[in-house]
Length: 272
Image (cartoon, rainbow, N blue to C red; front, side, top):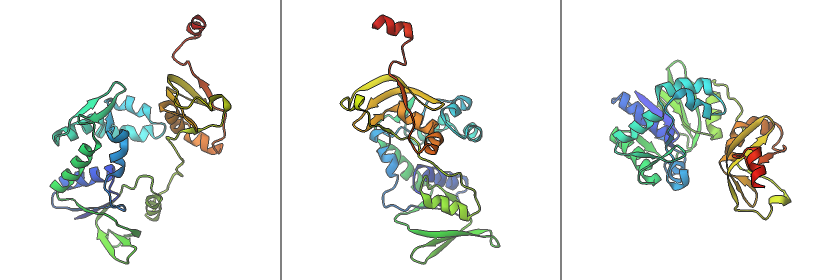
């Protein structure tokens, strides 16, 4: 059996390793467009790689996702952060938990995770092709196989195909060609560009607990004033939860900021 994964990111490697372990006789191949493997893993968490989060109850875990909770609950029941921790532990990588729940490798180095994924794939015989430029693919229904077409005119047949292309538009196009319906994606997890004279000269100042509100959505967390506007966990979380609302308004909405979100009104009066 030939299994091909399009996309050599963290999801692609996990899928390939899992497929190869489930069927040692299968030929598992990863096709990656870039020449550098796991580039996003290398830079995640400021180069430390925040692998997962210390939340081990699926019902609680799904509350941290702005959309798809119903679908995610089933997936997290089968494989959740505790399974991720054990997966890496079995391969010699121990994780640590920080005060905010984020989990990093003990080495504080994303290369530890990259090397673990690459070496684990090699160990179970996964092949990796980099610098691959794809032109398209199609489902050969009569043969129950998939044909992957390369831009140089070459083709590749496989019995099983998995798209692990992340936000790459080509991945959405491939999925549509195979008959899938795509929910139009919109930007998420972004900072806010704000032109306001009141914060113009305050770049670099941070607040440990603020509350941001746009429309009906509110989020709390640390907030950072930047030279272009607002950043930090509060802004990033709000951009995710209000992603569709912001998109529908062409990203022009009133933003309300409570700079003293951790204080009650009586406490504020006492301080004043």
